[in-house]
Image 1 (cartoon, one colour):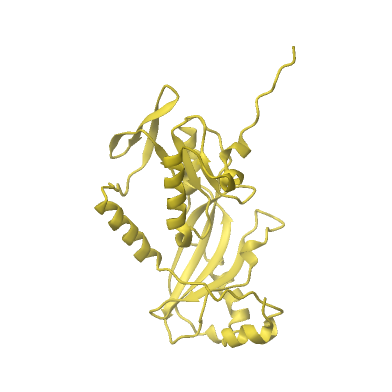
Image 2 (cartoon, rainbow, N blue to C red):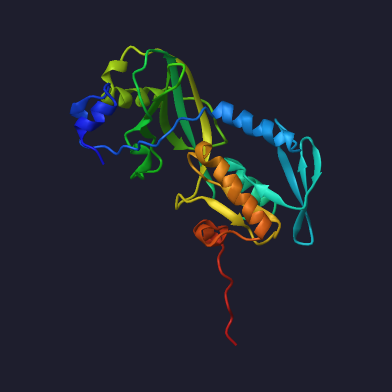
Amino acid sequence: MITPGQAVKQEPALDPNKIIGAVYCPGEGIINPFNITNGLASTAGRYGAKILTQTSVTALEMTGGRISAVETTAGRIKTEFVIMAAGAWTKDIAAMAGIDIPVKYERGEAMVSMAVPRMIRGMVTDGSLFVPPENTSEMVVGACLGQTASGNIVMAQATTDGADYNCRSTYEGPVRVARKVLTLFPGLDDLEIIRMWAGVVAYTDDKKPLFGFVGKPDNLFMVTNFHSAVGISPGIGELTLEAYRQGRTTPEAAAYSIQRYVKPEKISQL
């Protein structure tokens, strides 16, 4: 925990009159999501992974209580073990295996500016996105921003409930994000925005990830609802590999099991 003075010393562009207190993480880092995704894909390919882009899952073939094949728009894939890391599409694909799981999704909007001289030193957020809204039907707007090595400032996020996997940007979302950013960083008032985008992100009511074996089918492992997952994806991959080799997850992962959403069978008394 740091004082407003310390916060402004770290981020000189901040308006000190708008800060009560702050939390500072000196060990933070910035990851380029394009580079890390391409890097992981390239390395996986060298080890024999086959990546099918622009390919949809259309059905799960069940044999003896196990998933024996995955039907896709690129053809049928025989399977011995299935990892479902489907994000916002988890509920739809899980239903193909006869699983009803309450995974929902929301749309998040962001934008990026033209390149400018260094103004933002680290990643800054006002914390609005970490506070549950009183009315979930309303747009939740936060100021979260950072500056890339090339000088572009990335700003997020306006969040609304998802519908029909709509990934289009709205007018209201980026405008409200900009207004929030300007309350903290008034010096950005002439910043030119060059691109906006939106994406859908999975979540559960308890906001916890889903990680572990499903149980039925017994060869299905679920990995979803990890927020800020770009930064921790290598660790998630290592935990998934360990669970596959051991045939079980670690005790620490029990809180994230799908079993918390499985209703226990009623026991009839004789």
